[in-house]
Image (cartoon, rainbow, N blue to C red):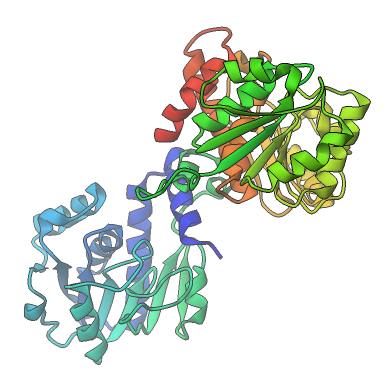
Length: 473
């Protein structure tokens, strides 16, 4: 099954992989027409009741595939100038140019189906939630009162495609034609469901692409802290690494970022950005007697980034291991602590390069396709999400495995991994781990491409500056 959010991501990724939405809409409309032909004899009266979004656009294509064999009427609920997408408008214009019987329904009181044999419901689709409003509500009631066979496009109008729940009124469909994969909410509807293959490439689920950015949204009514709080635990031998991770988390959308670091470097870390909140611990490196203090701080955050700049001192790694064994939140682990990842109640996102992957117990292949199995296996063994960095980043939670292809050789400079860890931490504060890892890899690599722009080398600060541009795109 596929959720509505994931379906939107896959649609957009398919376009990024060279299969445009226009082609998918043609395939969707054709699939609905095939089902109608199975249910209706040639010459039957077909009524298509369409909304102004892409669900309606699918049905306009259906009309073209049915035109030669049936008595056809298309009802657009609303004025044609309010059609909401360019591709739907194109297909409406095609009906008008072909002089189909295509009518605007400007007043729900004037909606008259005139006794069709089959009704195609294409009013609301999967992207609309909540109680149907006028004119859709009256149209739903009129369709349900009809004796015609009703075929719903993707999901019956008024039904939540994720839950199967209806807010008030919903189409009582006799058949549903849904696209690409089964929607969760359709399992509760006791009618035949046809799952139509519309040509979305399998790699649209695997390759991280532009569509994954659709997971990122900000409620216009949100308040400080609602979009994620992140704690970076790092520093001691190094000051730049935790500062880069923290700045990247801010740049990637986290509302508040705190840095827990040894007091010997706290002032330096703070000096990198006025928005960082430093929380010093005694001494000049992380040690075991800091763990309880760090756990208390971490308990108040949405996500933790552990590792940037901590170093590999024995005391520090013992402390990092102790923190991981006790922490039960979401933690992005990078750099030296990757070698001490152990049993934990935490939700882990690990970001190793190939050498660190080996220290974690894996054996990465050279070919990225084979690496998919390698990463999936280790992720399953550790019960963690792993993002193995490389020319192609491979990430898996042991169940879903994906590949990111963004990036540039100009990113081989030090610090780019710290930016990746910080951005991933920001996303992990608000998303599922596998989605956070995918977006972290994608935006980090894409920011590198924008920053390079023909240059042989860039700085990690360049990545941070370009993160918002990638996310906004």
